[in-house]
Length: 186
Image (tube, rainbow, N blue to C red; front, side, top):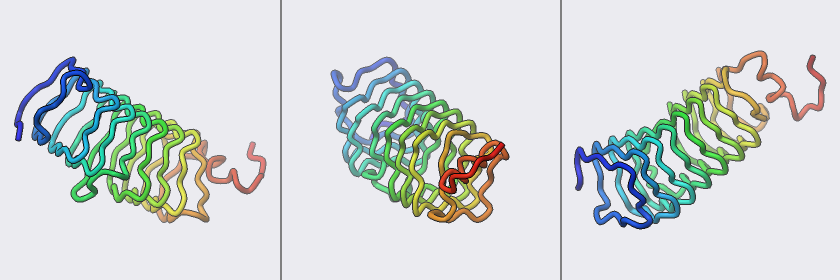
């Protein structure tokens, strides 16, 4: 296991990772694009300005991970090892990613683009979507209890298809909750 190491400006599709367990490591300006990270273990790591686009993360462990200003297009988080899974996203691009069926309570998404993402059957209880663009992201059979959407926008969530007790929305977000009813709000 590699501990307390810092990696900067590395392209891991060229410079292959020889170890697959990392604890308390920092990765800055690194590219994991299209890299197979299957069965890797990341514990208490920070990924800053990294590119994970189309990376394979089958049975990958992400525990206490911070992704900051990172590009994560088309990532299938639902294929990760879900035991102890915990992460937060700040300033990330998660467009077309799948979080299908994940139990990721109390997850923080701040200033993220999360367009066309799949949150179907996800348990997001107590999570925060702070200033996130959720255009065409899918929420169905999701547990959105106590989720804070107050500063996010462009979402379309059908309250009849999701658990939403005590979820928080702003007045400006009401159209995203009423879209299925074909009513006009002025």
